[in-house]
Image: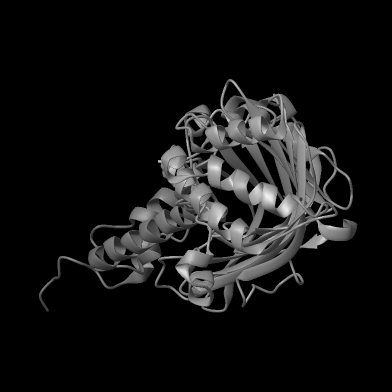
Length: 441
């Protein structure tokens, strides 16, 4: 018989061999590798498989524990903060804090069905990145928040907001959108991620940083700006009230303010320093923010003269702007019996002179709405007064001129004299002289 290059006789292989000899084997055999069990092709294939297993054995943990979490963090970081609140209820206001409840909608672009759960408590801090340990505003949400990854999510969230640096917060509010440059929102907590019914991450640490978009149309409040910030701006303002009343019955207050309907005006008292009257006002809330109030005081005027306006519910009742938590108003128009007080900070020598000053201020192109806004709540906290101390909002002079003209016509039709029987006629003639078209143009 002819001899073969390779021997089939395993007995020719010594019984005692080193690991190297076992691994590499005898090249004269058909299966020299791994104890004479593998041929050359099998040997290469096994090593490819082992190399692939080792590669993925290292790669998968790195992806799972390092790469994907970092991708999730980076995907959340440096995004403009653009939440739009359908409802924002503010309650339990103190000198530096309040509780809140909001409703909003979130649409995520992922096509993969799943749920991302933010595990409470979740802490949000507004500040500069180098000062997140202090910050100026701190928000804590105790409840879990579930967000669907492939569908529109309706969120109902309650929490607490605390101002930790009043001076900085006041400057941010009064300085306009440019004052927010360099400020971000940090969100710290934990998330659980579930896809296809399987929990992929449980309590993954969350440390996301969001930009505050430097957009004047987005932020609204502040020196040299007008308008209401986008997150709390009501949609379709004045649509409903304009369907209920005729145009000549409404007092337009400006492009970003509600139209006003006054049912009746009853003057209680007036002199050179003050005028007080009762009225029943109907209007839409220009903001999605709702809270219960006992009074609201703001100043209107120019650098030369100011009038302080205080609006309060009649008979000391609470002005209830929210029916209950979790419910968006179906009816937007509110009708509220009010007591309105004008305090002339630089009064004229007579009531007529003070009213002339008021008309001049309201129709001036330099007229502003000035802080502090003394928004009083049943708790008595003065947080809003503190943070709006330096706030100044430009008022549209031409729009106010139109509003003053409309106000004159409404008051002439609805005025009811107070205790003085001559008061109604006096104000009627006075308004004709002060709020004439020549004066308001």
